[in-house]
Image (cartoon, rainbow, N blue to C red; front, side, top):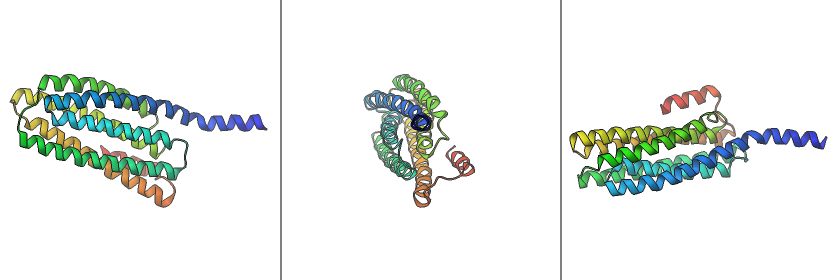
Length: 220
């Protein structure tokens, strides 16, 4: 009987074990890319790169929280999702403030460095996105981190596009606009994650799969 119970317990924990390995991997990828992009963003004066770097920092916090609640109850995971939503909200507001600063400075960033760093970040975040994709429907905890990873990929593509227009126009406005758009993605994702986490905290359960599909459509 004891051996049977041990096997059952191991089977139940196995998916969480896989999730843990994925979360550790994507956490370290985001920590490294935060320092790379932040250094490049401040050096080049790019609002888009700096916003993307802050996105990576926010995600590193998100993945750390997700690891902490991985084996805990639905209320713990919902509470963690609530904190993640608040982090996304805070970084979105912070990016908008920095965008305002770059508008006042009015100097175009170094476009070639923007493209180089954003391309490396895109490869890193695509790796995170693919690692998390198989777990996006596991629960509210993993779904929220997958949404963060998807936002990273969108942000990287946006920075590359902005760099191209900065090069063509010799203007800071493409960089500023993309930085503002990344902030908007932050804020939209924050609203959706907060809505889902509050529902789970109130009802002690997650929304049905149909509601989940609608959540993902609203985040697109």
